[in-house]
Image (cartoon, rainbow, N blue to C red; front, side, top):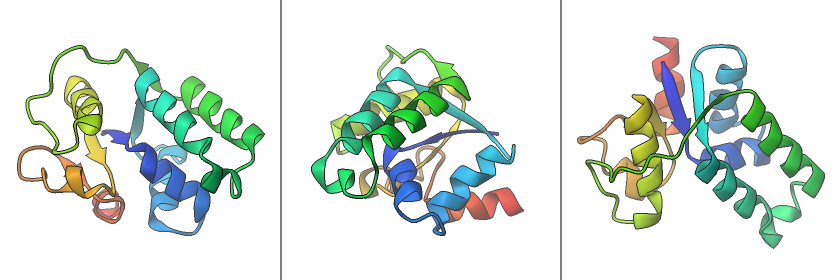
Length: 135
């Protein structure tokens, strides 16, 4: 199985290493699925980790190391140029949908703008995704 983790899931995993997003990330490290990333996803992650409210919890060098680890340790995919078949109410999320569609991956997100699309594409909350890996 391939999965695209929304940057919010990765950030949540960093902030609470015992939570469900952390379990989703750990499942990738354990080889339970193939994590798909692109430069756009890594750029959004990098930008978000630079926000002052996150800098209090994640040191700049940790943020850089994480982004580089994800860049090297994954299926780095070209950012799709096609418009996704389903659009998010938040246009800023459309690149995640396009990436998941282009790589035939599920999308894992805590973002309500994406979760409401679950009847149109394979999008899971972190808890649903972790549960699907156990079955």
